[in-house]
Image (tube, rainbow, N blue to C red; front, top):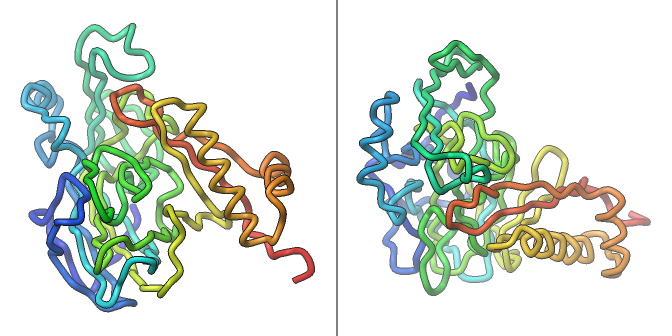
Length: 305
């Protein structure tokens, strides 16, 4: 379990189920402040034991899942700026859950009834009720800023960020989020104690948590879409209903990024990605939302300096 405490706190009662320009911030901070977001699991705290899963699914509203805590505003942030959000700590609660739902997931043709599994956090391990154990791998599933127009429910990914479900969004990762509206309106949530790439059943180990971040305002630095620094790599992404199109968008984004950073031509960027970039699936669960794909490329200096 990753530990830590922030100077300011956004409580679990201050949540949103969508990203939109009309949202009012629950907190305003100065650039450089540290904030702890207390987050709820994908069920908004309704699931604590296996018997809770069927009851939750009977009332589940697809427009009110994956709550994000916030949003918060950064004083002085304007459209065209960037919020640099460094994840300092992820503290997990003691119980998480995972489910299979008929009609969802990559193996949905084989699933004809609801199944659920509860996991207990024991130190740095997850332990199922049948005794299976494996290490935790805490990550943040939903992170983003509010768009200038329209709205995205928190279960959706998009050009603002949102429900990306990338295992790389973990302690030590820095998210670079574009500002579209005054204050930026940053929100995050949908923490997973562990998630396999693809999230093939439509859920991971869904869990409530405390996520501590440091937020810095970088004037005039926004790119069109969020990007990330993770484990010595740059990360760009794509989202689309079709996996192949999501790959194309993610690769195009990385090519544009490398053109800027490494001062290479676009064909050279494509060659570099093919030679050293890693294309990885985030979410491909066939559960009614766009699929997400990221490209990771090692941080390099431009040729000649």
